[in-house]
Image (tube, rainbow, N blue to C red; front, side):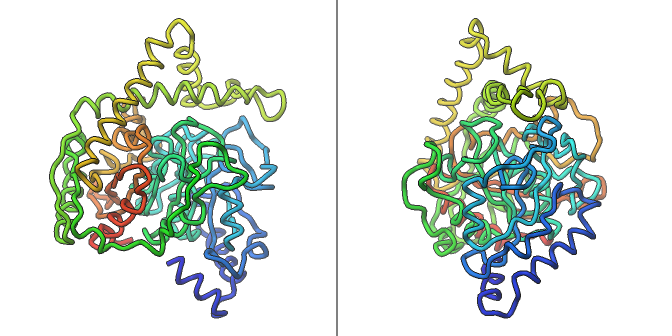
Length: 455
């Protein structure tokens, strides 16, 4: 869809400024009910380009990614009123490619959440099933794309924060291999896990946006791999799935609600019809059981470290004085786990467990081109419904594993399920080996072609 829009711009059939104006008018009508965007860029029609791979494209950017002159408050009172003094590398790249930043997307506070309800700006609604959460923490990014308030969006994914809302909102979300996309200009949740990635309507759009934002450069931080980025959008081919070996992960099915597991099984059957060999594979229940506590121990410690800059002396307010319950929980837990006398008991053990998880996942991927399963094990709850911490963290059980291993993973909408009379989108997750992002995208494209999901 992005490619067609760019062709219309370049051919002169569509004026890029008028196209952005139409988005602004739609945002004015519909965003107040959804609360997907917390800042609207009225100057976008003058900023959009008429040339480049993203010419005329409107992109929303998550509120933890710096866009010069626009709010970058991480949806927290801690940074209330703060405006970014520079463009993150990914933002500079989309602007150079001809896109305009249409607005800043709502999110869970400091990306610490799985529902989109912890923002100081209020919760984001799910445009596909109003009254239910859109997922998080990239809630506004996914909701804005699903509602048609922009062409695409940038989100960040620490343990599923792109894929979780993509599944709930019925859009495509992709977490690249750790180190493929620059993190410079992203406000950390957990720096060893965070990756910026695309949220789009189609897999082809995700491939194109990934192609623009990925790769090394003069101003990127040291985690980015110094290697040429494949032309994902040109190489994308759903026919490549023929002859692939796909592993349907047994434990992912076992921990998911039956109707969600059935969607993943139907996706596996669709890949078989497309010429792939699909086999059930076991990662071992221990891996699934260990992944979530391993993830959260590392998350707590790295988040605590990252938040020490928010002391209220140079800018903003002291985070502990104004933050919400979930952010405070992670700070307090991170401080406790970081103490020298207990580091070996918790944090260092978590690092060893992470190494074991990565080794186990890569061993499983030696026999398969990709692994398949549900994205999220349960459907989105209603906004305002009280969940325990354990229940809320349960949304992440399947998505944290690729982050811990540094693998690329994406969610593609495949069908809907019935939840108390609501038809709720349900995505399936594809995981590939590190640096084989194109393989994951090709499998996702084959699934998209076979999907029963209708927006």
